Length: 348
Image (cartoon, rainbow, N blue to C red; front, side):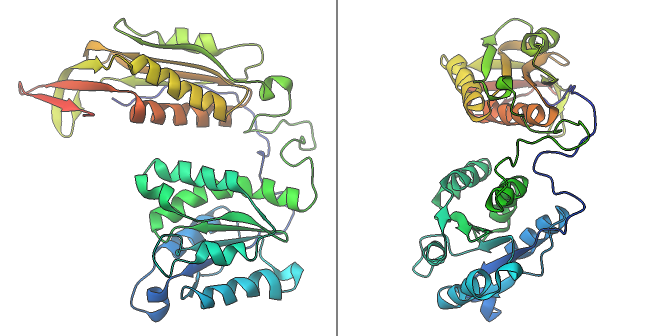
């Protein structure tokens, strides 16, 4: 079950949070805290993953600096954030490792000594991103905060943890640094030339208003993709993004003839809860979601999600997040009827 039908506003403009191409690139340093890696008995892969992500985003970043846990890490961070002349300090320092509960996992404590302020919301965003992949993400004790005009973020010592962290940090970096540099309008001003920001909601009252759930249901009746997308349209909406989950004719190399979807009595409540979470996370949206139960044949629609927003990128993002939440949290199971006469339960 995977097919998507999406539509959005068109136009070209420099996106919110994007660096002015006429300015020098931002600079970052990745510090790996690992006693074993520093001793050469362990090959670290997390640091290179972070450097690669930063470079792809156009941020200057040398190869990772690998130091042992404890005092060597303290000396390295102190050099980057205190000893270097202010103009030579990096815009971003990312540490990898030492955020767990082992005796020598002291990265958060060492980082706290050098922070002027902490950013707990950024930490929550890192947890949320990590939770989409591993439950243990919430066990990270890493901090995020500001030292002078440098953003400092502790990430886990795993390749996956660093990649998840970069997915959160990089889109926010320019906005954070603008604020640290005294730009109080960061994220809200319009680029010169009359173009609107091409990704995030702006400062129009409709973009700042609470999001609205216009339709949310579990049904044994055929779903109406066009109707759901029409429901989220409005005069304030410049982009409607829709997802259609369609029954396909194969799964895992075996032919599929049809599906039976069975929903828990509280499935509708869970679906509304997923919609509500997206609504609380992103203002200014119009949201609709529906999931089918009962017997479906190949080509029928099992899930429909539609999101209306002022701008396309937030509409795409919110739609994608909502589909993931529904698949992860809504207690609906499917029994596949296979072409060879067998049956197979999925999502149990």
